[in-house]
Amino acid sequence: MSRTGRVGVGFIGSGMISEQYLENLTKFPDIEVVRIGDIDTERAAASAAKWGVDRSGTGDEVLADDDVEIVVNLTLPATHVEVSTAALRAGKHVWSEKPIGVDRESAKGLVDLAASLGLKLGIAPDTILGPGWQTAKRAIEAGVIGTPLTAVTSMQWQGPDVFHPNASFLYAKGAGPLFDIGPYYFTALVHLLGPIASVVATGTKSRDRRDLVTGPHAGESFPVEVPTHVSVLSSFEQGGQAQSLLSFDTPLFRHGVFEVNGTEGTIVLPDPNMFGGGWPIRVARPLSKDDSFPFTQQWETILDEEPNVGRGLGILDMARALRTGGSHIATGDVGYHVLDAMVSVEESIERRAFVEVESTVPPVASLPDGFDPFAATLESVTA
Image (cartoon, rainbow, N blue to C red; front, top):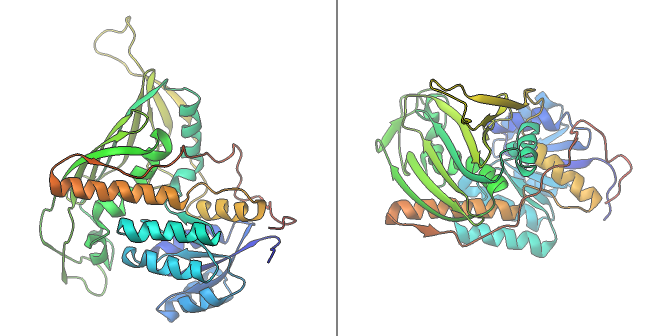
């Protein structure tokens, strides 16, 4: 069945992260949010009322709605594959929050299912589709730092239990700093340096139980099932290397350290977990033979205007591809490769050894220069 004009989107899951998606998707002219579903139907109804969405209900009602073309899967990581599979079998294209799943076998099965059904599968994050990251990516491709060689990334703080009323799932299998925050950093590295060939890592856990700090269950303890401080060395197929720290165990709050070193400079990029932060985007130039101690670093500014968009760009990119017949950027294949790399990190921690990453992906495309999420581009386009 051919479709014309705006692309209908339905949500399964109306928790905290849905607010960020809805704030943007309800402003994009090429998207129409038609239904919000949740296991808690009262929460879904409240969300629909807040964002001016006419219909709400259960997840099954989202899957049965003929006006829904893309299902946005915002459930817990452990159910990502289950919900995405149900949506694909219902004939819907799928955008899933990260990670794609929590194990290789089921995640690969999901990618293969989407391909066999001729449906699109998109996996978060889409922060790297923001104008800051895309500008930096194009600058690197144009040679602003020469040949990229290495990268250094860091995300460290005391953990999400300080603010999240249901933080226990963020310390369960399929989460922790590796699977909760790692997708942002590893996806960004793959976009810039290509597929990951191998990893070696260490991981520790500061304690076996934590306490909820906020919300109606504050004071209740919950088990910590995964490493909460992870250090990774990644080697890339194209020859680059990266050093990454992911921690929920440090009182020092340091987010968004992301630097790529090349033969002719170091570019400092925005936080890949955010659409803003880490501005301006700058390049540090090498010291010259005329420099003397104490050295003064020479900087060039690439971009100093913070973006006015947020989560939802990946869904918009997918929606436009549905109408034009093209391919979207944040594909299931990229999502699976990032999961494969993170599972390899997990295995490296357990084995205390290098682990080869079996999957690969072709170079990841960039959004076209001038991509405008607030333009109405699909009014007369028929899929």
